[in-house]
Length: 126
Image (cartoon, rainbow, N blue to C red; front, side, top):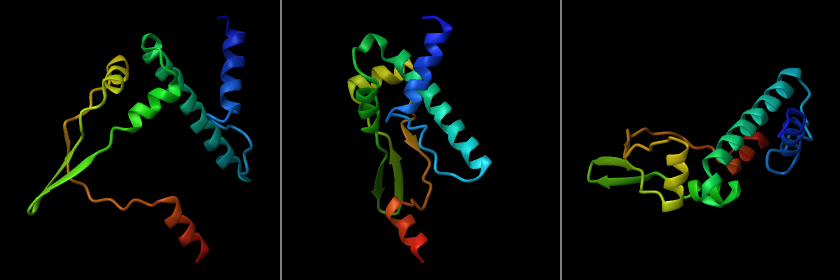
């Protein structure tokens, strides 16, 4: 694939529903630059993901769905908490292995406040 075709493909990918470079409804130059930067980062991640799944015969969307199934579990034993990462599915493990990513078995216990979109909208209305 020549450089021209690679650039065309990149722009096509950025404009589709996957990465949604446009429309950009921001008014500040720095916000526009930040949005484009994030989309370019997403494009690089997508390309890296595509390389990781070439021999698996699955789409990037299917790979993302497999990886999305890996969720941290918090296990409580009395006053003790352990944050565990369950074993990924076979496909997810292959994607991670091809991308040279090794998940830890446990995580340190960190208390965080997760702001969901619903909570953010409620705060903005005030």
